[in-house]
Amino acid sequence: MRLENVSVQQLPEMQNVSMRKLLTLCSIVLFALFPTVCCLAEGSKDMYPSGAQGNRAYMTSSSTNTSALIGNIINPGRMFVYAKAGEVIYIGSSAQGIGSGTTRLIAPNGAVYTTGTSVTTGRINSRAEELAGPAALTAGGYSAYNRTVLAAEEGIWTVEFTPPNPSSALGTGYTPPAANANWTTANQTAVSTLALIVAWDITVASAGVQKPGRVYLNIFTANAGTASSAFYGKFNILTKDGFTYTATGNGIQPFLFAFFVNNKGTRDKATGVPVYKSVDLVQVTSAGGAYSFHNPTLPDDATNITQKMFYNPPDNTLPATAPVWVGTAAASTG
Image (cartoon, rainbow, N blue to C red; front, side):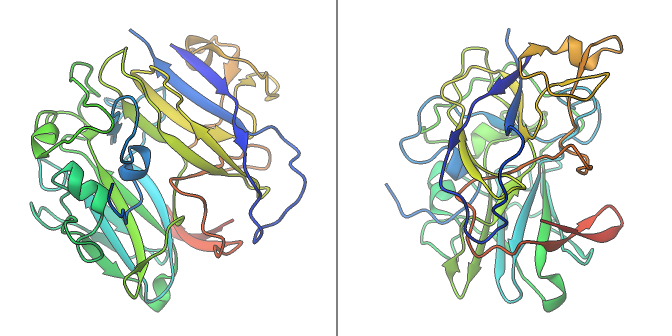
């Protein structure tokens, strides 16, 4: 098992954010364990679009160290979405209503909503529904759970997708479908004892018009099913300095993996200085290891920054800063 530093391809910079010079290397950190329709959605549809190559890696969502992927990284299927007052947030997951499968939304003012236990509302039942997006926006889509954003709720919402069994092991023995293959609820129920989600979606719309480029992650954790499964998923990276990049899996065979981006990559544990190389994971997680990394589920500090990973190119109307609920209080992010 290794921690990999992966290069990225630079794209045009965003025009609405600070354009300071990029002073630090944007490092993609990948932990890996080796043994045609009009689409209105943001989520797994963008990782596995129509015609996608390779295999579908299921998202892992864990609530305890029992199913945490690496060390102290526990990712409860967490994503973030920016929405303005009056806009509508649509939510869906293939795990909805299966076991513990549900989704929790936290507004910037701390208000909490959930999709509950419904087996219809908020459930994505098939590949066709995944590609189409919310039925309220596109015929043939899934029956989405939705919230209209109140004036006090404008800003960055936290969304946590819960799998059928969030405290289970991540699982290693399922057969992954091809990335472009049709799938049904049967694929989700086949892994209903595990912390896995086949498909997920967050869509923002205003007056029925989708607003892409609003959804981002700090980390993506997944299970590719086998050591020979190929991952081609793509992310659009927005750095704190205002630069955008695209990063793709490019056919890697990671099995169980965590994908995140920061400004240092692997660090020397004693000095905190980036080492600009791949290392064995045991050298990071063991007490006597020589290296470290900044946990992407923790807040940034003065010198360690986790960059935002968008499913689509970031919306160029995004504000420089926006409120978000952190722990037990409101905060601001930029």
